[in-house]
Length: 70
Image (cartoon, rainbow, N blue to C red; front, side, top):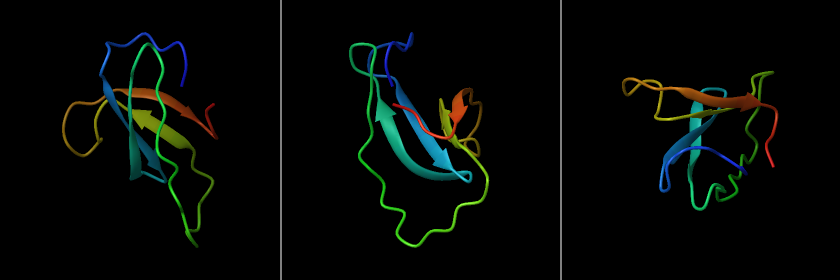
């Protein structure tokens, strides 16, 4: 992620098929995530989604949605 207009240190949650697969912490307007090994995980047609918090935890905002982000 690059050129993100969110506060420094913001933690975002990454999901795939609505399962949490990692977090991104923003530093200097950008962030990255440790690669997630899906192993033999079968993926439906769902997209990668990035949220301000996990959707089942309380109020959240969907930040991005798509097939992949660089």
